[in-house]
Length: 222
Image (cartoon, rainbow, N blue to C red):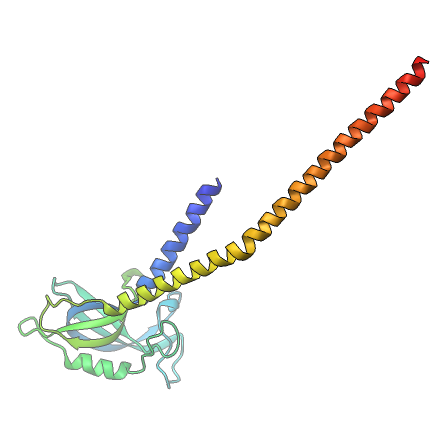
């Protein structure tokens, strides 16, 4: 039972951390931008997947004007991005130029006959039934739909996290070796000594009781 609980705990932890990293780390899509627009949006139970209002504005955190970018992938499937400032909150993209990014996206609109392929750096997921959109962070014109993009940022971040995890584990093992294991050994030795004393006391009691019974038996035989 304990083994299943332990494996369940680790599986849930790995899935949770993996989901957070997949949502937060930057991803890049090569698309053709087809349109840009602003829409008054009421943020409800899905507010966790939206950023805060643009820095310096007095918009409501529930209903506010949100910028969107429409695009088409090379395979013809459509994708919609939101374009919001992130400010200083999570995730730490420190984005304050959503207005400039919207103007840049409008300038890069193209048609299927004369496509302009753009690499859109974004984070987040597109979940249609929950009205959740990835947040565009950066736009860059590329040579074509087959342009290869190497995820340098993700590799650096994941390597740093792996190194940090490795160092934390080494520190924990050293702390356990120096502090916890000796304390457990001392506790085990103390329990062993207590058990030995208890066994000796029980043996002595049995011996004393036996002697007392033998003495009583000797009295009645006289």
